[in-house]
Image (cartoon, rainbow, N blue to C red):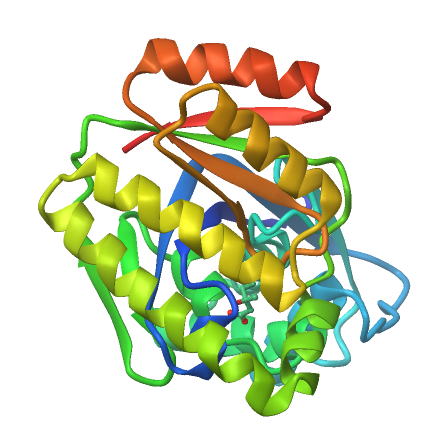
Length: 293
Ligand code: MEV
């Protein structure tokens, strides 16, 4: 009996250190890959055609890939196994799209260039996110931290701060699409916030280069306040940010599109990160991760 061909694709998740929302308006953002938090996709032959669901990044990514390969009529089934919690600002939709596109190309034994992969992932993201900046797909495709500017590109950033970043999930679904349209609907009222967030991204970049944890931490605190005043944070994220500050974190902020999702907190050392994780879990975080910076 012939073994059935299986196409496999993987992708990792990401977290935004600074620049969510302002990145949509051309300011720089800094984001980190989370290489151990992964999505794996498997594609196999099927006797039924897939049905497209345009609200689902998996479905839109698979169809974008099939169309690109001129194989829209092929019957395949697609399965996802994911450690990336969905709708938490961790790039789940971009990671799912990237893994699925890789799996479709692998299934048809087609080579896939990085620019084509990124273009197809962004095509799928447009439907999930509405006018995405491209930051999520770019970070999920990167093995290093990046500084990203919409339509201009990205540069790799060395991260050797000797510090730790705690990521804590509020357990509440974030709503990137709604948050992005909320900011847009504020029109010129949003501009001063976006401008200050843009400046804070530059401050954090300088702080990272100088390995000045205090500068980075303070700018994170200020960015959280700006995002909260912009209306894209949530009571749960605000609470966890406050817990992190009370526990002596150098800085803390919401991360990603917001209206739910995750917070991040900067810690001096592993011991502080671990005790902060316990405190955040006691105060309602449903999941936590520690990343070495
Ligand atoms: C979403 O992860 C980040 C946002 O800045 C939207 C985007 O960049 O497309 C909120």
